[in-house]
Image 1: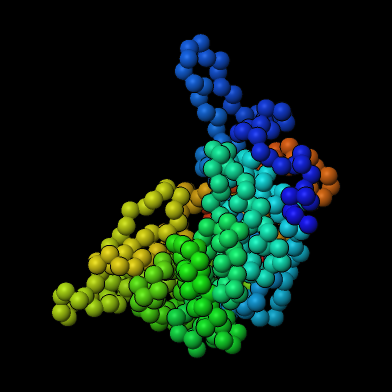
Image 2: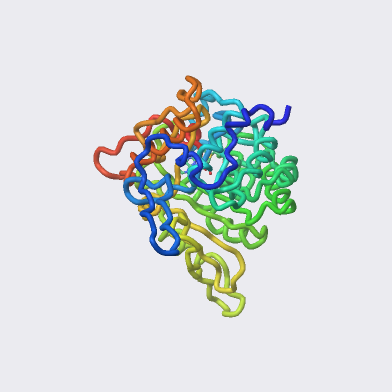
Length: 385
Ligand code: SAM
């Protein structure tokens, strides 16, 4: 059955901006003053503005807690899925509510989202939604790429714009030691190439570096970015693993990565010299990655440094877990049970009011590395990276 048929027609949000506010749900939001001239009324604050003045427009949704990899830095290898999944039409209904409040970008993640039955239908439905400005959503997906070879084209056809593939090594033995799945490297490489061929671009590859573990891959990734025409992004390791691995010393910092990549490749124009990295300007304030290219302009490297150069002040994100809980920060100590309210019959307006109130308590920043830092109860794989 088509997803649209599963939804009550009154649940669907198609009218213009703030239609739900106009119906009145008791929220105190700034109202435009009556105007005596023809000057247009000032725009309302977007509903999803947190108490620190950050506008939240980026939603990450985990659509399954299951994963087919057991990456050694992420999972213990002994724990399977820990949290239930919602039905696909329930994710769709919740995402629509967020979009009606100002979300413009939706990234599906997991667990491993390609394991989720109904994913292609969900993408197709999401591609029909419109932002408050009447634009299509920016639709992206984060995957380990294992099943991407056959799914890239169907996902593109359904309306997905981009994928980010997680890869923590560019040589097969190291890759398979990390994922603990035999043959995984060739599967993911085929997936990366299929995604590029399908036009799921710019294609980003995310790599988490751990000192003494896979930091010998840095130089190989620099070559990989240029040869495979992908954007390679290194992410600092955060204390979000199932086990207890994280120490400040294991984090390979942005500074070190930039220095090492700048010495990785010979400069064809200057015998005996290497090609330095050149920083690219940010495209938007909430961009998490510092972007670089090589001096010859070929290849892009991004570095996401939540530990050594936190970007919480520009955070525009909110997350929905596979079991329908809102997390306002990766490191939140509390979760907000949106799905519980849906299950107990809350109306769309009540659910929107709940989302708005939840955004109000979004944390100012994380406290990684500070005394008293508390690891969240869920690890990355169970939150949705
Ligand atoms: N299965 C999908 C994938 O592999 O991309 C989505 C879920 S996975 C948890 C999302 C991302 O989180 C991956 O790129 C993974 O490397 C990253 N990740 C996992 N644990 C992390 C940690 N402790 N610090 C930083 N990134 C982490």
